[in-house]
Image 1 (tube, helix red, strand yellow):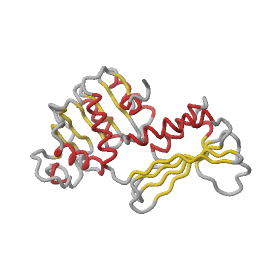
Image 2 (cartoon, rainbow, N blue to C red; image 1 turned 120 degrees about the vertical axis):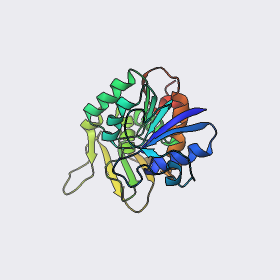
Image 3 (cartoon, rainbow, N blue to C red; image 1 turned 60 degrees about the horizontal axis):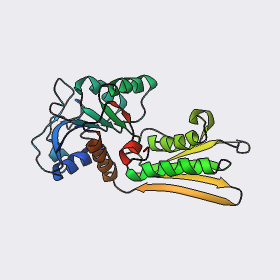
Image 4 (tube, one colour; image 1 turned 90 degrees about the vertical axis):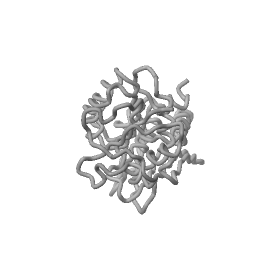
Length: 265
């Protein structure tokens, strides 16, 4: 049995994690932590997740708030994640929080020197495989134009999505360039002809879309389209729990979902 705590327990993915943990005898829920100013603070984590009474309130960051947890799964916000690091007490960390600054990422690296950290922009196994395919295609088709298109629900606050950046970075790395040097974020006005080697990125925000990503590689005469559609946030919860099982007892270090799936072997 893997003993897990959730940071961001009242969030969209956090609630699905709580729900799945309570249904799966492979896991035990040690703690649930959320924002102190949220309406769900100190409410029962199971009831908040729609899974019935769990006997574990949604607590706040404080000493021993993750007591007993072998793995802490985080789906929160950058500031919340960094604030939580001193309270983890050496537990393995699985984090899906994106949008970290360079300083925040360095703090995560520092924690990874003492415990295993699995960090991913997207914990879907399908997206992880997609990134691998994108890298292979970008390398095999060095002259193809690359465009990344992502769609999410109207409430998403950042663009492009962390997953879109992950896919574009996979393509850029396969070609030996830095994404920051070749990215074009949307187009407007008289942009001129497309410059060879650039990677276009486009974000759609609409309705209740969970997450859709497409990567186009187009040459004269043919187009390759690689994509992934998430129909439920359960796919992220399932992947994060898979990462938690893999991370428990692992040596300290920074890992990715590619490591979890064995794609780096």
